[in-house]
Image (cartoon, rainbow over all chains, first blue to last red; front, side, top):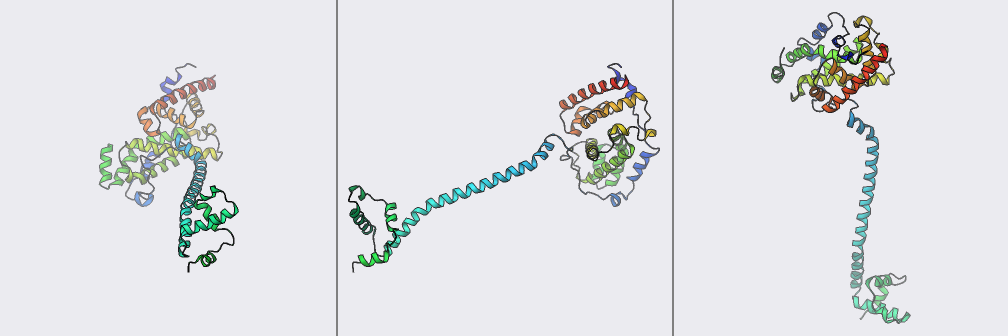
Length: 164
Length: 175
């Protein structure tokens, strides 16, 4: 068996045959004006630029990975939504704080108390407990904590401190 | 026999039946042999040819004539062949090697030609396609590249490997 066997022109000849008249039958099947009626027309056209070979390279790889990719995308989406919610609620919380402070101060204003009055009251109270000079620098948070102290009643305080 | 230009003109003027009759006349034999060399059995080749022609007929209105008609038709036929072979494999049908003798009256080759067919059957399906298209049909690599959607370099490498394997198998078979 020589290396040149494949160059033998005899091997290049077609070794297969077809039944007699086969190609004439094929042509007859697809000729005439009724092929549109028999075979339909313009349905599910294979497009020249999108026709791909089955199981071909990248397409096949993507098809194999598709379920995993979909799952991963689902997780990413869920984490993304969760993270967004966390960020949004965190931001709202931060924005809520000054609003809460303002609403309390507004409430005090409603009861005829100004910031200084409350501050004085609070300071007096604290000074009774601990007359440390450091306590004079109370900030708003401490004030709020104090105002939320159980039993503290703005209405009573109003009555008690009403100038009238 | 009409060129792509004339066939296109017929299609654009709505004469699809006329264009398709000419397409069948021009290409059905070439398509059939392309298919037959891959599936070996005439009945299978006939079914695949009919599917190929049906897809070509239904797709003709959307064919944009940007590629050659021959390339498009071969591409459809190749798709059909590979789909058939995959289905055949998954259905555990008899291997193609056993089918060479399925219709002996339709195989007129001698023992050397039969050995060559058996050697080709040892190749993976796509390498077999490349080998058949180049060895028997002498299709240019550039055209094969358009039909199979593979680079010319990859096709040349594939053909080179296929030839070496076929030679080797032939040696074993003819010892």
